Image: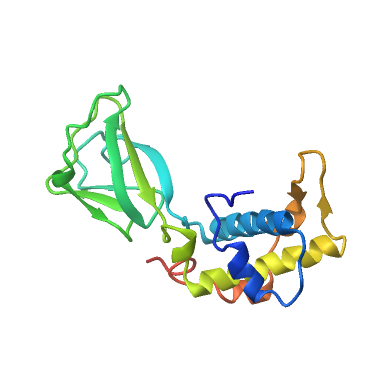
Length: 196
């Protein structure tokens, strides 16, 4: 099984962290994916870089066009792939017409955003880590601790393995509550808490 787009660690990294012997690598990779997605959701900012598309009018509220900045919902912004009108027409905005305010989550036009025919569809890449190998040690440690917590819950019968969807693991009740204290203590700015 290949790890998903959210993965914050790999089996070799995790294996070096674990203090137990594990034979079911497929289960561990499923737990890595589940823990990574839970951490991504907890941080409310994409940890692994991925593509998003958002629609904007180019202004504030009911105003169309004229704004200096367009605020995007995901950050940090790495790059803008395209800006297209809803009608599929190419943007009349060149990449040289605006600056990416990476950590603020905004695109700042050098003059003001023109009015789109309907809405701008902005496709962009956002997130902290480009690859699983680029994940910093703090976030990797948080993932390791959460995987270990989930593994203990599965092996102690607190969460059930489901055969309904092949080898998938269901432990939704463990992923919707509070994170374990030893995981939560690792999370802080810039991932959660104060805005970057």
